[in-house]
Length: 279
Image (cartoon, rainbow, N blue to C red):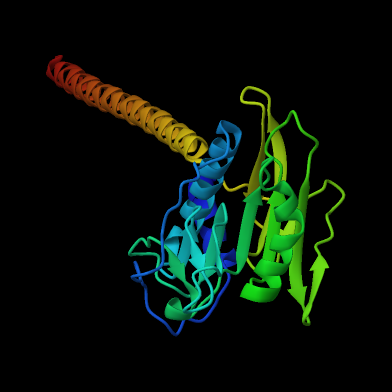
């Protein structure tokens, strides 16, 4: 089975269906700052996690032009109040155009809020992420789901999620392996340890458990698929050549048989004529 082709079929099957937003893409609104003095990301651990995670979600949702994936840019969620702003590590918005890229995201202008937000814990923001931001994202902004994850393997594992349910905030119950299912994105999220980088990577997968690969993994799959194709083509070529050789040999043998039969027939005719001429 072609793994990439099989994944593409599942991709179309599992990506959620949603309406288009009522607003329009907005690159920048004058008076709303789009950068600050804080460095991004907090550490190399966070940088690696954010980049890989963004890459996975961006490539997974690339088949839909109305899914926007944000990466540490500002979200303003109340018109006229520049203090009502957050800058999640990763956020996903349904119903708005993927492009153009924005300097900031303005919920009232776009006519949509993120359906899911992800924060990767750092020493400076961990307490705020665990407490205050749960209320800000889910209560004030109206985000459907919020997840926090600790990417540094040298620190205790933390992976939690919350969602809005009938006006309340409820914690998402993990499965036996500690994975959390996002109803908003229709994806599973589980972490795995990368001992080379010492990063505890949060990994998304489809509802049936099929992983969403990184760019490196996807390229490896492409190379493997290409290699298998080349091997299959080589085998087919060799089989064709063997068949052609066999057909050529069979043709030579058939021609030789015809020649022998003709010679035999000629000898028989000569023998018969000789017998007829005997007195």
